[in-house]
Amino acid sequence: MTRRPWLYLAPALILLITFTYVPVGNMVFYSFHKWDGLDVTMEPAGLDNYARVLTDERYWRVFLVSLYYLAASFAQIAIALYFAVVLSFQTRFRNLFKGILFFPYLLNGVAVGFVFLYLFQPDGTLDTVLRLIGLGDHTRQWLGDPDIANLSLAGTSVWRFTGLNFVLFLGAIQSIPGDVYEAAEIDGANRWHQFRHIIVPGIRRIISLSFILAISGSLSVFEIPFIMTGGANGTRTFVVQAYETAFQFRQIGLASAMAVVLLLLVLLITWVQRRILPDEEVTLS
Image (cartoon, rainbow, N blue to C red; front, side):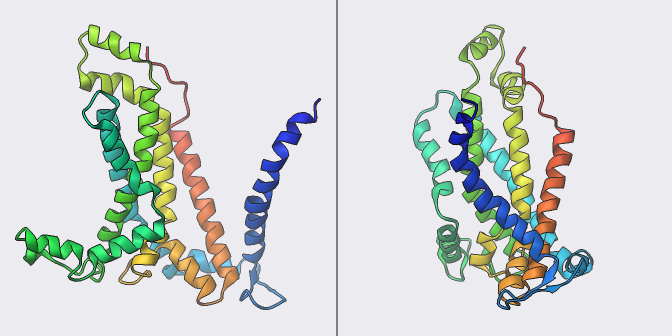
């Protein structure tokens, strides 16, 4: 009888170990070697790959691009929280709006990249719309100008991922008992008071999770800049840099070290955030 739970867990554990822990272990092993991905033998490199990642400005400068996506992630959280609060109450066509907000997240990231690539290209959809409404003088090289290329990509990220945060917030808000709102209304609380004293404390854990996802996601952006610009015009992210290092320059060991550094950085930021915002028991009293 004591072995039965492990029988149920075995398939999931086998898949987890095979497709998560074994690849991570291989990545760590590769990071201590010089290897082009083709030779049968690997040359030991010790900590040289890590020293290069941590000291070469080229590999740290691309982290500045993540700041655009970090700001976009906070915009996603604000927009998603606003619509989740509004649509959690009785609102006309709220099911339609729920579908509209969540639909972009269902699309494949590559498809989203190509759609917005046509939107932002010269004389594309965005430029055409601006001319139709009399704002033709404001057309720009949306992906070709280094000053605004990252803003365009970050805006694409907002459109795609707002739906995820929206669903998380909406599910958490709807899990709050309805009698709590009724008691608040009897006491004279308006919508703002309900949001401040009921909704925010009730979804504190989800808000904390959203911030963790925002920080880790902004550090590991890949699909949108890779599809839309290929990392050109100052849009190269750390993951795009690691991809090019591995498959364009054939430096698998160095790229693996970059991946390990990114993993450790995300774990460190998550640990710090959990220390600052501990997972406390939520009460509405």
